[in-house]
Image (cartoon, rainbow, N blue to C red; front, side):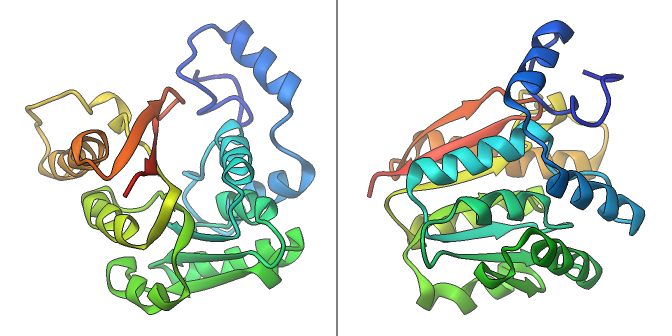
Length: 229
């Protein structure tokens, strides 16, 4: 998928450029509001690692399909994915989004303001592992989207399992592990720690008994689980 431009990256696990281009041209996932968020985030010095344009559309569509009003995002960055989720929330909806970097939160708050969703988003700065308990009282939640440090995906999943409603959805991004998810040996210790976290996350969702789960073959992998009990 390299070389297709910013709107084509991370679209699908689709090596046919013609089909990938068709999907983007037909579904038109990035409107001017989202494009401005992406461009301003990069200009502000944030890493260009927000979800892809089609991934944002997946998030919005899945949020609507669940009928979510109460949602959590772990990993705010510049507010691109958060805007996609917040747009889709039902009446009176609320998104609680977490990022460890104050600069990310600053950019994201401006994104939410410009997108017209600031009234339905609470941006929380700090380690999500430490800060998630601060919103326990607002649960149960309808949707949890995880796109942060991969090492802690199992911990985020454990929290989601306890605080989603039955029928609620958890989504985890990057779950193909940049092509390394099936590997067992690694040359780099950091890669190994991150991939082990993703492997544990996928394994628990698939076999832990509390979710019915699948992995959507997006460019980077999007694991989705529906809470059963």
